[in-house]
Image (tube, rainbow, N blue to C red):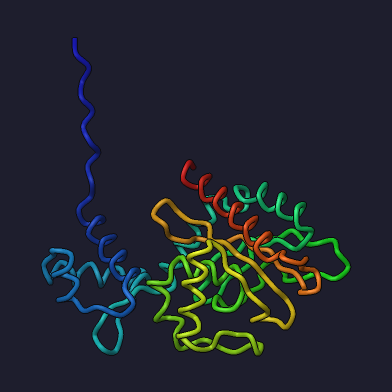
Length: 256
């Protein structure tokens, strides 16, 4: 007697269409109208409109004054919760401990929050002169190592969003798109970001993105230290260690 061939599970068509709309809007950099969405997704206008109304009622989509629809922060909050379920802290813990032991400096784990990074874990340096940021603290993505590494990995989607928000924090902050473009190209080429005191005077930081298998950055590991703690020719050494740590965590994510 032959074994029965398992049938693939049925997919709810309404749910799949609603999720397709939500994914489309979440990836877009602007609002979209009913006609545009229906054409892109191969749905009827009436079906698209009904699904948008449901998503709007549930708080995942908002209807703008210009008659277009866009994803709300609730969508990003769900995505953020998904990152938490990946248990990023536990996965990155061994690499963070190794970095702290090797460098003696403060080590951070950060995730994206709008156009900022938020620190979700850290190992504090025991040196008398050290960098300090609290868990839960935030910093702009364009001027700290962890943020710049995430920005570089996701630059195609984030470039236009950050372009008009390059706020100056020190005389080293990159405040023009031309300067940022050059820095992002350099970051992508070497595999880690280097903050030369762009957020706080004389505080350096290094960061490397933690990547999903599709190449999207969901977080970053970083090391931060006062400039007087940096050994001669130490930038490439610390940057390389941070890069290796992030690659190790990314590999764990791919297997999880």
